[in-house]
Length: 553
Image 1 (tube, rainbow, N blue to C red):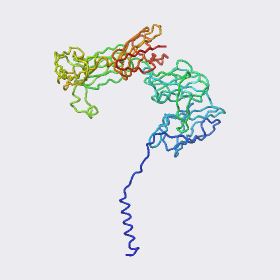
Image 2 (image 1 turned 120 degrees about the vertical axis):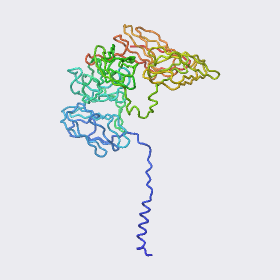
Image 3 (image 1 turned 90 degrees about the vertical axis):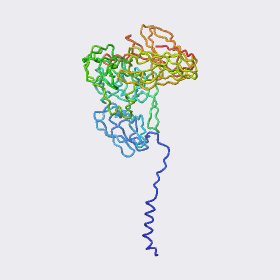
Image 4 (image 1 turned 180 degrees about the vertical axis):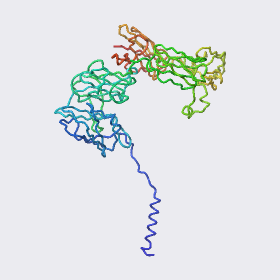
């Protein structure tokens, strides 16, 4: 066979071999976890006598720009937003406005520059320039925290008004604007010298003006003077000018809150389960009354610990729509309530048998100083007598317990246990019936009783100013309030029988003496009541006493 005659066969074999070749994905290296890095600026930042129409910023990788209309902050603000173009690895910013003469401009990119593949965000990038012969060299910095919880307030707009404002709160666009980082800190660099009104705003409608009652706000009581020393920005060219914020005596602390200027505002009533209605209010309620406009409606009423919600547990489950008049601190609302209806979303992923069961849990299992307690998700009907079986290694004891004819959602069990012994407590099924008609399966709790040596004590010496003010002293575990005491003078409190772990102390300066924390008022230029936190977390060890002193300023 000649070579020419073999060519078609060889070509077919090559094609078949190519078609059967296995495609192997390239082996990747470690996952990229770094944000884009700035490698070039045209012109460079902090340049003067700027007379161009655009700026170019080049990064070391392909990137995207997330929502620049909200996340790129320009001070002073421009009437027309720039046009943002991405060309390969370069961001081109084209100005649509005529720039003011002899003005320093600051551009802050807040969490909007991110790499193309892994979405790693550059948390902060700052670019400044001046149309005059010099760059403004004054600064302001600080931190925004939640006034009640003392936690950081991220993604707040912080705004400055030179020389103060004509109205309070301001109704015009600010002179300077920036945004808080994840830890609540903020910095204004390259601003003009002088005094400023300072506000921080959780701006829901993105207009930089406080005009919605549910927008969280913070403000300084007086004008603040900018300082000459540049803000301590740690400039890292490798990461695109990431900022490390340090707070010092020049730093501002702004406490954010939701104002209580309006009358009690009833939010949308909720009906999360059969027989339970919740009436949430925008702010705490001091006095609440209700009038049901339909017969045969009876319920238990509970005020939430924060006094901003009223909860009804129905004694008889409504089968028809009914109306009622709610009066909170003199403000009346007429609401119409419908019978509960299980939606597809509520039933999805659950067995109908689970939905029809009364949730009951055991509390204080194994606790030496607290009785074993049943907690009911819904108030239960009275029970004349029911058996509780306590099983240990050697015997079983039956104790008969009664449920009184009152509002019962928790029931301590009068059982006796010995330390370091293991027990199983059993209660038969269908003993308890909630007023919503639901009952339960058999209940079981297994535990070993602790001893007195398994707990620690905290002795706290409160040193309070002798000013006649009420102070609400609170002991907190990681998530919940454990104890609250009201003091008017220095005293020593002992928090006994604490489980080993971490605890925090918070003190509310109760200026109006109503026994709770009160938010601020924008219209009255009133700050929220101060909350002071003990400077460190207190660690409790078993069989150990810890003594601390808390000196309040």
